[in-house]
Image (cartoon, rainbow, N blue to C red; front, side, top):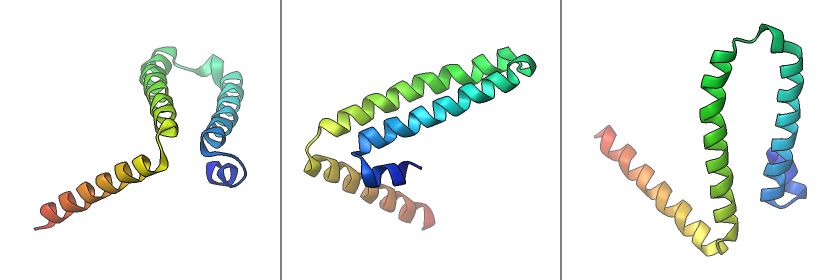
Length: 91
């Protein structure tokens, strides 16, 4: 869904729109399954999920403010590190 939104909107807006759709879906599921939910398990999963979602949104905001060349450098540096770690693990 997000790649399709990204064709028509800027990436941060596409991600936000996707988040709204997923949030609405989760509210719908909550309405259907709230009575059968084990709330202790819900809290154990939702707390770290909410924290990492906020961290991801903050990173998205940070990356959106970067100039495109800085974004490209970050991506290229990360991919070269991944490639070198894969080669060292194979040998």
